[in-house]
Amino acid sequence: MAQENVEIVTLVFEAWNEGNLEDVLPFVADGIEWLEVEGVPDSTGAEVHGQAQVRSMLESLYETWEHYRLEPEEVRAVGEDRVVAVLREVARGRASGVDVASRWGYVITFRDGQLARVEAYRNPDHALEAAGLSE
Image (tube, rainbow, N blue to C red; front, side, top):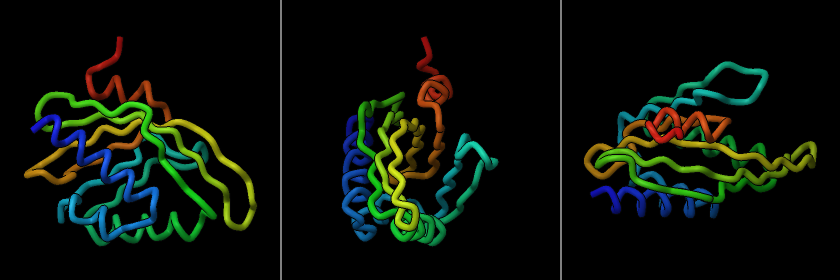
């Protein structure tokens, strides 16, 4: 199951990067919790609950950014039901034309083969620590 979860996370981010929500949503549990534990510097963490809100959040990203990608640097299982992913964010603002390049960490918990909880961290080291992988 652990390796299958790693493969699902990889597929989800590939579909995300292609802007194909219809390939992302089958892997998202109806009652998903998506928490931005550490987000943009001028805001507190955001929470999104449920598949409909995840869809809305992703649609908003696609509208805000001319292009937006999360390129996996590392995706690995943590036990049977969690995956940690370190990703490189590469984007360009639609209105501003400003390029963004940064790194994020995600801790993803699975339930019945679907993403049940996603924790996003602006600092990938904090995601690794949250997953119990800090050195």
